[in-house]
Image 1 (cartoon, helix red, strand yellow):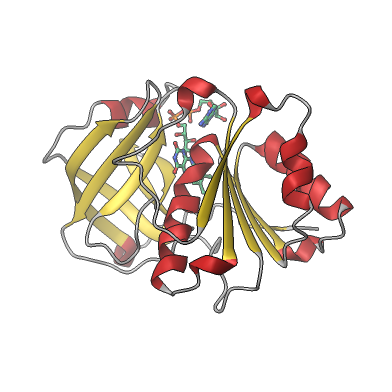
Image 2 (image 1 turned 90 degrees about the horizontal axis):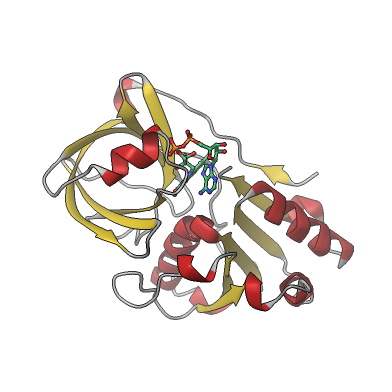
Length: 228
Ligand SMILES: Cc1cc2nc3c(=O)[nH]c(=O)nc-3n(C[C@H](O)[C@H](O)[C@H](O)COP(=O)(O)OP(=O)(O)OC[C@H]3O[C@@H](n4cnc5c(N)ncnc54)[C@H](O)[C@@H]3O)c2cc1C
């Protein structure tokens, strides 16, 4: 069985954070990049997430999407689901204070990186992959990371500033509408990665996990973070 990082909504007074909205940008009709300034800076690892209070007694998990070495915290949010979390993020303005709990989660890159580590984000699952790319680049291990962003909808693809990636690693986009035969699964599986980090939609991740295992990748070396 693959290692699944379950969402542990560990709520502790020690983890409570107040952050203020520094910038709020619409990257595409459905993707928002929210840049937050913590009132008190805190460390986190790429792949972890914050549990954000989006309404009284309601929280939503959002992965860190930026450089863990930056004083600002980036969140990449898909507002298409239209629920409490989406409405909360849509309603944010510069200077607003938000309450969050974290960092939480164990979906993190090992130290050191295994040669040929693959990180795949499906749609908004790109969020932790962008953060992992930053962390690997800071650790000067970016060359060992192959990152893929898989987009199911061409209109949902952000590009350029402010959705930039550090280099290395190389980041390859895959457009599923241009790949109805599922060649992307075979391409990634053919790398036979020593470790794989997969994030995003459950069904797409299950297909990729199956392809990796069929190519001989040990399931213990596959970590998944399911968003929905
Ligand atoms: C560990 C973890 C990290 C996460 N990180 C992020 C992140 O960085 N960015 C982000 O946008 N979301 C992230 N999510 C999902 C997020 O927590 C919310 O579930 C999502 O934003 C929808 O919230 P909502 O209140 O708007 O809709 P809800 O009312 O909670 O959900 C409505 C429906 O939409 C489905 N759904 C949720 N997300 C999507 C989606 N993107 N596309 C299509 N259907 C969806 C849900 O399964 C549900 O059926 C993460 C989830 C987990 C568990």
